[in-house]
Image 1 (tube, rainbow, N blue to C red):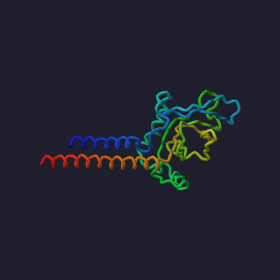
Image 2 (image 1 turned 30 degrees about the horizontal axis):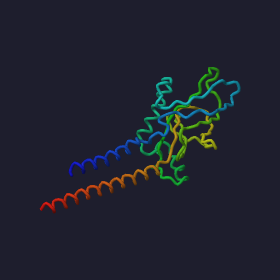
Image 3 (image 1 turned 90 degrees about the horizontal axis):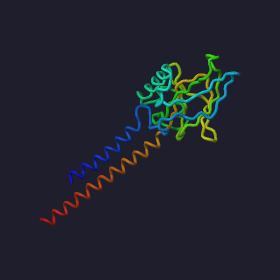
Image 4 (image 1 turned 135 degrees about the vertical axis):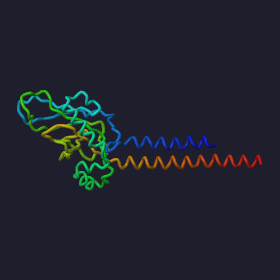
Length: 218
């Protein structure tokens, strides 16, 4: 019986541990498996500029130039070392209130770098209109941008009918998708409760069977 109890308790602990690992610092498990969004389209107001934009996932940061990679790694550290995203940008508190979300339920699902490449004619490539296709925008709250060592909210972000993120930006660097994980945490809580109840029933059943057997033998 002790062995069975140990197995059941180990199962519960394992499930809880997996749920804990799913959220690290300000991050939650990536729905894209750490893949960057697809660039659907972009426009620039700088005539004749041949620059194109590319998205690079954090997992593929070694493909980036040293300066760009280090900036992406710095951005990652700021998120992984916080449990409250409002500490990164206080405007996220206002966004959460407007959506009726607890700010503690905000987390980053995906982080990636956006860079303009292919043009040596200009240091600044003008104003871009960008359209990205992330793997998932489930529970999307905001798009944030790491610029000059600080996170800021990208204003006027829209999700079009195709499920693409549409926004405008003048400067590129690391970006991150902020989502509401409140529903997922609620689901996990019910799973833990169900497992605990199931484990308790199993243990009581085993104890009852053993007690019944001992009574007959007596």
